[in-house]
Length: 525
Image (tube, rainbow, N blue to C red):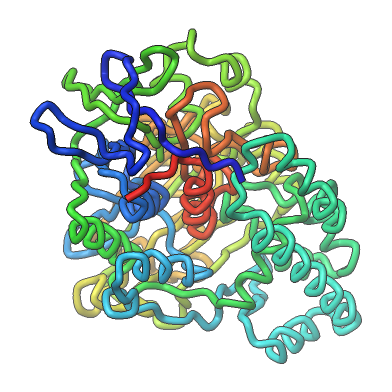
């Protein structure tokens, strides 16, 4: 792995200063050596994880956040006594979080309480039948048998393929930065072993005949912005990740994990500065040398790490003359993940028969996904992810109440939808659908409501096209073909988060910070 030593530090004026062979701390005008500075744009899971890892490596780290609180897509809304996690709600591979605490000499379990989910999800079909999906092998076989006993052998074969994808794809490639063409060449045999040219749905369909079971075993890429009919079957690894390490939720919500990460940084003297939008990555002598805030303030840095949306970062924060690879044309040609319509609502009653995580599916699967990903058409029907965190932690709502969010995958902004004008109409349609299926009487007991649309993702989170997860995780937009953790265009610029390698989802963005470690300059302390 190419992991260079920092031999020169770069000042704001572009001049380089040799670093002492005994260490990178260079002399300031006062004669006191200081560590090289890493500036991080954004405080999502990827940015906070990167900040911790770089701080431990010896960098002086500074984090700048556009919003008024840390978290990025994992921001927390508090309204009318309800606590709403804005984005990620599912924690898998918790060892990736435990690693960050251990790096700081702390215990994750002391700061954050995770609760194992059972079921992981309830998948409810339009006809009212449902599949309770969990990590217990016997339960899963029994659930499969309820729908199609003849599919049990095929289901077992699918599990074997999913395990192979986890071993080769997640464990073998997740923290490799794919910085060089040789990294890609070395991985090709494993891509071939996974049959990665196939879509996930085709892999499932190869082994399972029942249409409902095909949906149950293939919907997972939607959790990271991918169309099951198009993403590489390597994402079968999600199925195996969940069975291996379980699906968890945090007491206090996902925001409790964000607070814990910020606490680790505070303990290391790393500031997280909020209400500080970055409007430019300053480049001198062809190298990133710092950032400029919307106030005009300049912060010098030896390296800049963007946890922002990668397409937005290149298009809006880096001047075009510095972008040979990530030109405006290439950015525009990319295929981007879907948008997200999210309705956060609190109810004056509790729905105790609704589990923590539920998929409430509409009448169409493949056709709806074609509308979303291919046609960029906002259809009248929808499939929903319903999140009821008060099933696990009642403290997230006033006594006797429930906290919910419901997420509808929708096209990104290429659909042309006027979301400010249409959002309430769409919300009402979702409310009526939920009231008719799993939340009877809903419209009479809503006491708190908030909506986020793809336009909000564009305007508030600076997501290109309002896409929720950056580039769609297609084979030719994954690994080496995804924006690199070390910028292909600008020395000193690095990226982490959902829109770089290895991709979206909490495990993916945490792994991107591990991959970052392999390509940032060494700091000798």
